[in-house]
Image (cartoon, rainbow, N blue to C red; front, side, top):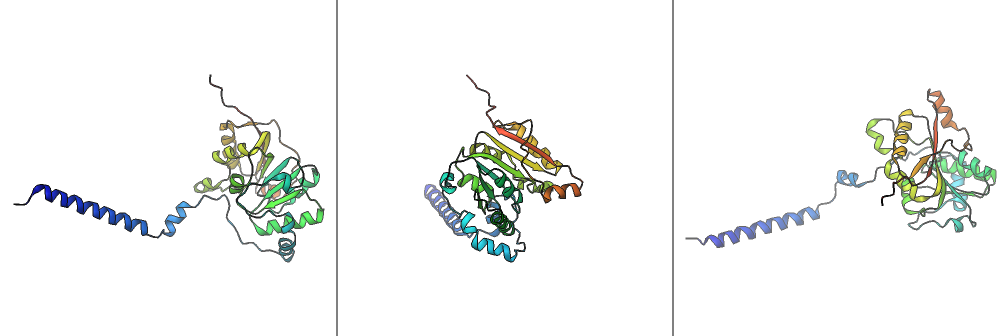
Length: 261
């Protein structure tokens, strides 16, 4: 007659061995394309390979070393970057840079930082900087959210401009919109006290989306008017051509959190 206790011990040993082997097998499995995709952050842009002109290629070769900021994990020291202490104004997604360069020329005592991922736009902006002979602009070619998270010191920005961001108008793509509650919290960390967030869009649904997120934020309060230093660009005219009215608003950082005693 078999010892019942010995049988139980043998079964328990076999079960543990099976689980250990299964764990080893899972740990050695290579990540699939599907699992890797799930780990990627949601981007607010699609990197398109647009046509780059000969002039833009020259600009990337000759002017980028003068005005471009190399990728790095360290925070930017703005006083060293611009060789002076001055308010820093950030424009996210500056397109071809016409507005960024115009604002920088109109406010020579301020420092301007532009973020754009598309090379033709960066090249065009560099050519505009060269033509206008302005030295108060620097450019980063990277994901704006990652730049804000890793490169911009807290309480270092006087203003953030976001003009005509990609609306991602299909409902299933709304998660790709750059304006989300977490993004607004991040902006509040990077802006100085009473720093300004200035937004323009020509998509009514995106305007509602932004207004809802901003009204729910304890870090911002709406301003009665927005700065009037933005120039008319092709995005303004595109919206009118599509029959859309431009929606433009501004907020400043504050603290609406209720004090609990």
